[in-house]
Length: 385
Ligand code: SAM
Image (cartoon, rainbow, N blue to C red; front, side):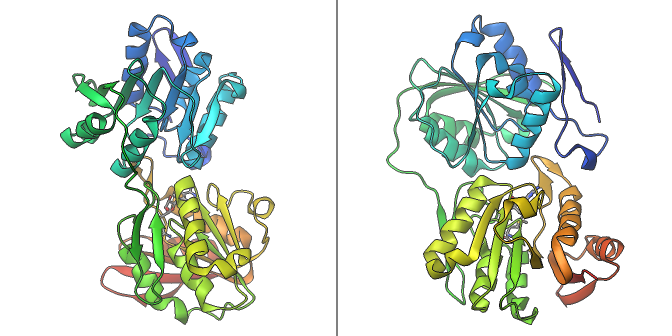
């Protein structure tokens, strides 16, 4: 992995977290980071003495570069925060230089300079622009950066709608900057959470802006729900909904058995907050049987969860880390599941049939059985022995 960012006579050593699982061709910053750094360095005389907020810094490159400004750092990603912490440490930058906020905690302090990486999910950008209305004034400078293909006319229209006049730069190494001048716009209410309902039982599913399958039930999850009742009786057992998103899988298994315990885990703060809300709204009487953890897979699970042992892990694994398509997270989820499960416990995975999950599970667990299959998906089960 290229870990050395050299720009404007300065060098940073930057890695992606967790470092050991990354592909050698990946790096922890992109052309949009370089473009926004160069622009700010060349156009701001006194950035150190301005209040700076950084949104969606993928792996902490911007936090490290602008640490002297003591920035507020906002992200929906636990993994991004871990990357940022590692990168601050290895560049000998005090962690206290950065004030960390997650995406579900309101921030009300005014800001002079906003540096924002345009996220993959447009709804997250929209929510963040709405949140920023309370923090910006006409003297605030908002600069966004992203891959040119992420910055469409509709993206600029969002900046115009929620903040004010917006222009763009020329593209450089396929990245582009967005310049926005806040005009004191305020919106009445947010569009989020998005709400939809499951069929049977009819659960109300609430989704904050960055939650996977925000607008409707994912088709892989739907297939898993059709076959949940085929799994072993989970009464008195502990189930982990790993990569829970809005918690739709965990919610259904919680409903199936009286004394079941369910741990909802995701790296997105908005996902875990949504899963918690969905338990409270649909089955408040079972909240004490649940735990909700923002985490990277099952890192240090036994220290983080109030339920220390697991009898089953349910998983609809992710395909992406930030903008990169990858199966390294699925692989880590399977390995972590194996280490957390009791002997005899099961990992149950739904995945696209073309994915190599059966071989991965056989390599890891020594066994893999097909619970159900259709034209697109398979549900696989592996037992810890
Ligand atoms: N279980 C939900 C469903 O079936 O609708 C969501 C499944 S979605 C395919 C995968 C989920 O994994 C996303 O919610 C994503 O935020 C989460 N995820 C991605 N990387 C993760 C990580 N390193 N640790 C924990 N969760 C992660």
